[in-house]
Length: 173
Image 1 (cartoon, one colour):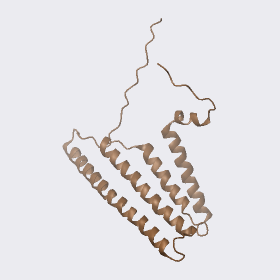
Image 2 (image 1 turned 30 degrees about the vertical axis):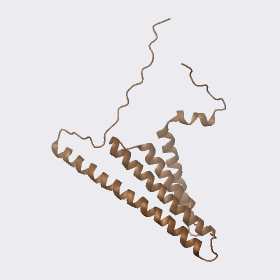
Image 3 (image 1 turned 90 degrees about the vertical axis):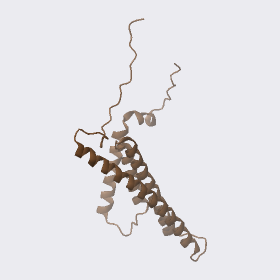
């Protein structure tokens, strides 16, 4: 056997947006204030999520109680989808805030995924009778740009399995 050195995984270096300790005391104090305000935002986001759930219940109840009873038309269904997706987006934003508080690192992949979910919500509830072609082209451009950003952030290795016909066998070491 030759002197083969096994590859050791390199430690990943993260950039802290708001380090807990800073050489300048004023900057350190300002970082503490910002971290405190992010905690307040997390608390407020939980209230928004609870309020959004109440909105979903209210929308469903009010639509189901209107004649014809217990039936939803397409506009009611789209409005309900919009309310559901708004709550899911709020949950994703809360997760972003929680991850930021836990690591002081902005989770770019999750932020881009949240943006994709938000623009998808917009597309689902679009009223094609009321929008202009320019608005539709702009929305398509945003989706395309976010898709490319997500692809670049996640890396090529996560996409190769989608396009290959062979299944790789796991290492049995």
